[in-house]
Amino acid sequence: AQSVTQLGSHVSVSEGALVLLRCNYSSSVPPYLFWYVQYPNQGLQLLLKYTTGATLVKGINGFEAEFKKSETSFHLTKPSAHMSDAAEYFCAVSANFGNEKLTFGTGTRLTIIP
Amino acid sequence: DAGVTQSPTHLIKTRGQQVTLRCSPKSGHDTVSWYQQALGQGPQFIFQYYEEEERQRGNFPDRFSGHQFPNYSSELNVNALLLGDSALYLCASSPLGSGYTDTQYFGPGTRLTVL
Image 1 (tube, one colour):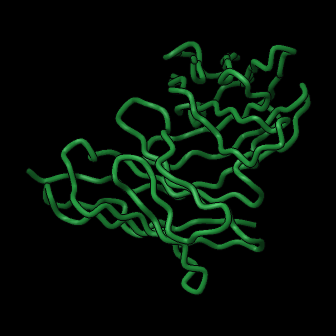
Image 2 (cartoon, rainbow over the protein chains, first blue to last red):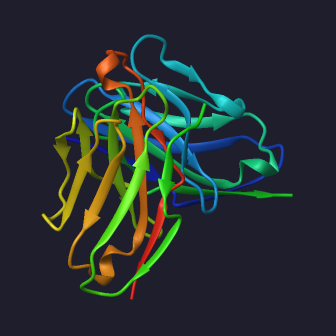
Protein backbone atom coordinates (compact mmCIF):
# COMPACT_ATOMS: atom_id res chain seq x y z
CA ALA A 1 0.00 0.00 0.00
CA GLN A 2 1.07 3.56 -0.63
CA SER A 3 0.53 6.73 1.37
CA VAL A 4 1.88 10.27 1.59
CA THR A 5 2.10 12.72 4.44
CA GLN A 6 2.32 16.43 3.83
CA LEU A 7 3.75 18.29 6.78
CA GLY A 8 2.05 21.62 7.30
CA SER A 9 -1.46 22.25 6.05
CA HIS A 10 -0.66 25.95 5.68
CA VAL A 11 2.63 27.57 4.70
CA SER A 12 3.22 31.32 4.37
CA VAL A 13 6.29 32.84 2.75
CA SER A 14 7.23 36.33 1.69
CA GLU A 15 7.42 37.21 -1.98
CA GLY A 16 10.94 36.44 -3.17
CA ALA A 17 11.66 33.97 -0.37
CA LEU A 18 12.35 30.26 -0.63
CA VAL A 19 9.35 27.97 -0.89
CA LEU A 20 9.65 24.56 0.79
CA LEU A 21 6.70 22.18 0.91
CA ARG A 22 7.29 18.85 2.60
CA CYS A 23 6.14 15.42 1.52
CA ASN A 24 7.03 12.03 2.97
CA TYR A 25 5.85 8.83 1.38
CA SER A 26 5.35 5.22 2.31
CA SER A 27 5.40 2.55 -0.35
CA SER A 28 5.88 -1.20 -0.46
CA VAL A 29 7.28 -0.95 -3.98
CA PRO A 30 9.47 1.62 -5.74
CA PRO A 31 7.25 4.67 -5.82
CA TYR A 32 6.27 7.03 -8.56
CA LEU A 33 5.88 10.49 -7.02
CA PHE A 34 4.06 13.58 -8.17
CA TRP A 35 3.34 17.15 -7.17
CA TYR A 36 0.12 18.77 -8.36
CA VAL A 37 -1.09 22.34 -7.89
CA GLN A 38 -4.71 23.40 -7.57
CA TYR A 39 -5.82 27.00 -7.98
CA PRO A 40 -9.18 28.05 -6.50
CA ASN A 41 -12.17 26.43 -8.18
CA GLN A 42 -9.98 24.57 -10.63
CA GLY A 43 -8.75 21.02 -11.24
CA LEU A 44 -5.26 19.71 -10.64
CA GLN A 45 -2.25 20.68 -12.74
CA LEU A 46 0.88 18.53 -12.79
CA LEU A 47 3.95 20.41 -11.55
CA LEU A 48 6.51 17.60 -11.79
CA LYS A 49 6.96 13.87 -11.44
CA TYR A 50 9.60 11.34 -10.42
CA THR A 51 9.51 7.93 -12.04
CA THR A 52 13.07 6.62 -12.39
CA GLY A 53 16.52 8.04 -13.04
CA ALA A 54 17.67 11.45 -11.86
CA THR A 55 16.51 12.13 -8.33
CA LEU A 56 16.34 15.91 -8.79
CA VAL A 57 13.31 16.68 -10.87
CA LYS A 58 12.56 20.04 -12.42
CA GLY A 59 9.01 21.08 -13.14
CA ILE A 60 7.02 23.99 -14.41
CA ASN A 61 6.98 27.51 -12.98
CA GLY A 62 10.46 27.16 -11.48
CA PHE A 63 9.59 24.36 -9.06
CA GLU A 64 11.77 21.34 -8.41
CA ALA A 65 11.76 18.35 -6.08
CA GLU A 66 14.34 15.85 -4.92
CA PHE A 67 13.60 12.17 -4.37
CA LYS A 68 15.47 10.95 -1.27
CA LYS A 69 14.94 7.25 -0.78
CA SER A 70 16.84 7.13 2.53
CA GLU A 71 14.54 9.76 3.98
CA THR A 72 11.41 8.63 2.08
CA SER A 73 10.91 12.26 1.11
CA PHE A 74 9.98 14.22 -1.99
CA HIS A 75 9.99 17.86 -0.88
CA LEU A 76 8.99 20.62 -3.31
CA THR A 77 11.07 23.80 -3.54
CA LYS A 78 11.21 27.05 -5.44
CA PRO A 79 14.05 29.54 -4.88
CA SER A 80 11.96 32.69 -5.09
CA ALA A 81 8.24 32.84 -4.41
CA HIS A 82 5.91 34.81 -6.66
CA MET A 83 2.44 36.05 -5.84
CA SER A 84 1.05 33.76 -8.53
CA ASP A 85 2.33 30.71 -6.59
CA ALA A 86 -0.45 31.08 -4.04
CA ALA A 87 -2.47 27.86 -4.36
CA GLU A 88 -3.04 24.41 -2.85
CA TYR A 89 -0.29 21.87 -3.46
CA PHE A 90 -0.75 18.12 -3.37
CA CYS A 91 1.85 15.39 -3.21
CA ALA A 92 0.80 12.02 -4.65
CA VAL A 93 2.21 8.52 -5.03
CA SER A 94 1.41 5.61 -7.30
CA ALA A 95 2.70 2.06 -7.26
CA ASN A 96 3.20 1.59 -10.93
CA PHE A 97 3.80 4.37 -13.46
CA GLY A 98 1.44 7.31 -13.52
CA ASN A 99 -1.46 5.48 -15.04
CA GLU A 100 -2.26 3.71 -11.82
CA LYS A 101 -4.33 4.84 -8.88
CA LEU A 102 -2.90 8.01 -7.32
CA THR A 103 -2.89 8.33 -3.55
CA PHE A 104 -2.84 11.98 -2.49
CA GLY A 105 -1.78 13.79 0.63
CA THR A 106 -4.12 16.19 2.38
CA GLY A 107 -2.55 19.20 0.71
CA THR A 108 -0.62 22.32 1.71
CA ARG A 109 -2.08 25.76 1.19
CA LEU A 110 0.66 28.19 0.18
CA THR A 111 0.14 31.87 0.94
CA ILE A 112 2.50 34.51 -0.42
CA ILE A 113 3.00 37.63 1.67
CA PRO A 114 3.64 40.79 -0.39
CA ASP B 1 -5.78 20.09 -28.43
CA ALA B 2 -8.61 19.98 -25.93
CA GLY B 3 -7.73 18.74 -22.48
CA VAL B 4 -9.97 16.77 -20.19
CA THR B 5 -13.49 18.17 -20.10
CA GLN B 6 -16.22 17.54 -17.54
CA SER B 7 -19.88 18.37 -17.34
CA PRO B 8 -21.75 19.83 -15.68
CA THR B 9 -19.63 22.37 -13.82
CA HIS B 10 -21.95 22.55 -10.83
CA LEU B 11 -24.84 20.41 -9.69
CA ILE B 12 -27.25 20.58 -6.78
CA LYS B 13 -29.20 17.49 -5.72
CA THR B 14 -31.20 16.38 -2.70
CA ARG B 15 -30.61 13.36 -0.50
CA GLY B 16 -31.75 10.11 -2.04
CA GLN B 17 -31.53 11.31 -5.62
CA GLN B 18 -29.26 9.93 -8.30
CA VAL B 19 -26.66 11.86 -10.29
CA THR B 20 -24.62 11.31 -13.46
CA LEU B 21 -21.38 13.14 -14.15
CA ARG B 22 -19.62 13.09 -17.52
CA CYS B 23 -16.01 13.20 -18.65
CA SER B 24 -14.28 13.38 -22.01
CA PRO B 25 -10.60 12.42 -21.92
CA LYS B 26 -7.72 14.28 -23.48
CA SER B 27 -7.21 13.48 -27.15
CA GLY B 28 -5.22 10.27 -27.54
CA HIS B 29 -6.01 9.01 -24.05
CA ASP B 30 -7.93 5.79 -23.51
CA THR B 31 -8.10 5.51 -19.72
CA VAL B 32 -10.32 7.49 -17.37
CA SER B 33 -10.04 7.69 -13.60
CA TRP B 34 -12.46 9.35 -11.19
CA TYR B 35 -11.58 11.01 -7.90
CA GLN B 36 -13.65 12.55 -5.11
CA GLN B 37 -12.27 15.64 -3.37
CA ALA B 38 -14.12 16.65 -0.23
CA LEU B 39 -13.71 20.19 1.00
CA GLY B 40 -10.26 20.70 2.50
CA GLN B 41 -9.06 17.22 1.57
CA GLY B 42 -6.92 15.61 -1.06
CA PRO B 43 -8.58 13.72 -3.92
CA GLN B 44 -9.53 10.10 -3.26
CA PHE B 45 -9.52 7.49 -5.99
CA ILE B 46 -12.94 6.08 -6.87
CA PHE B 47 -12.24 3.86 -9.90
CA GLN B 48 -10.52 3.64 -13.26
CA TYR B 49 -11.89 2.52 -16.63
CA TYR B 50 -9.96 1.06 -19.54
CA GLU B 51 -11.35 -0.74 -22.58
CA GLU B 52 -14.85 -0.15 -21.20
CA GLU B 53 -14.07 -2.21 -18.10
CA GLU B 54 -13.48 -1.17 -14.49
CA ARG B 55 -9.78 -1.78 -14.05
CA GLN B 56 -9.18 -0.61 -10.49
CA ARG B 57 -11.47 0.48 -7.67
CA GLY B 58 -10.92 2.41 -4.46
CA ASN B 59 -12.81 2.11 -1.18
CA PHE B 60 -16.16 3.44 -2.32
CA PRO B 61 -19.54 1.74 -1.90
CA ASP B 62 -21.49 0.19 -4.73
CA ARG B 63 -23.64 3.31 -4.90
CA PHE B 64 -20.78 4.65 -7.00
CA SER B 65 -20.71 3.12 -10.46
CA GLY B 66 -19.30 4.05 -13.80
CA HIS B 67 -19.23 3.41 -17.46
CA GLN B 68 -16.85 3.96 -20.32
CA PHE B 69 -18.00 4.34 -23.91
CA PRO B 70 -16.25 3.20 -27.11
CA ASN B 71 -15.05 6.77 -27.70
CA TYR B 72 -13.30 6.56 -24.27
CA SER B 73 -15.59 9.09 -22.60
CA SER B 74 -16.92 8.10 -19.21
CA GLU B 75 -19.77 8.60 -16.76
CA LEU B 76 -19.82 8.46 -13.00
CA ASN B 77 -23.14 7.55 -11.41
CA VAL B 78 -23.98 7.95 -7.76
CA ASN B 79 -27.22 6.52 -6.38
CA ALA B 80 -29.06 7.28 -3.16
CA LEU B 81 -27.13 10.48 -2.56
CA LEU B 82 -25.97 11.29 0.95
CA LEU B 83 -24.97 14.66 2.38
CA GLY B 84 -21.43 13.31 2.59
CA ASP B 85 -21.29 12.88 -1.18
CA SER B 86 -20.99 16.64 -1.53
CA ALA B 87 -17.57 17.17 -3.10
CA LEU B 88 -15.61 18.13 -6.18
CA TYR B 89 -15.51 15.17 -8.55
CA LEU B 90 -12.42 15.08 -10.70
CA CYS B 91 -11.86 13.10 -13.85
CA ALA B 92 -8.36 12.25 -15.06
CA SER B 93 -7.21 10.62 -18.28
CA SER B 94 -4.05 8.82 -19.37
CA PRO B 95 -2.83 6.81 -22.38
CA LEU B 96 -2.54 3.39 -20.77
CA GLY B 97 -3.03 1.45 -23.99
CA SER B 98 -0.13 3.23 -25.66
CA GLY B 99 2.32 1.71 -23.22
CA TYR B 100 3.73 5.05 -22.21
CA THR B 101 4.46 5.54 -18.54
CA ASP B 102 2.63 8.81 -18.63
CA THR B 103 0.78 10.53 -15.86
CA GLN B 104 -2.82 11.47 -15.38
CA TYR B 105 -4.21 14.76 -16.65
CA PHE B 106 -7.09 16.23 -14.68
CA GLY B 107 -10.21 18.03 -15.74
CA PRO B 108 -11.66 21.08 -13.94
CA GLY B 109 -14.10 18.98 -11.94
CA THR B 110 -17.80 18.93 -11.20
CA ARG B 111 -18.89 20.49 -7.92
CA LEU B 112 -21.74 18.40 -6.47
CA THR B 113 -23.79 19.76 -3.59
CA VAL B 114 -26.25 17.46 -1.84
CA LEU B 115 -28.92 19.18 0.25
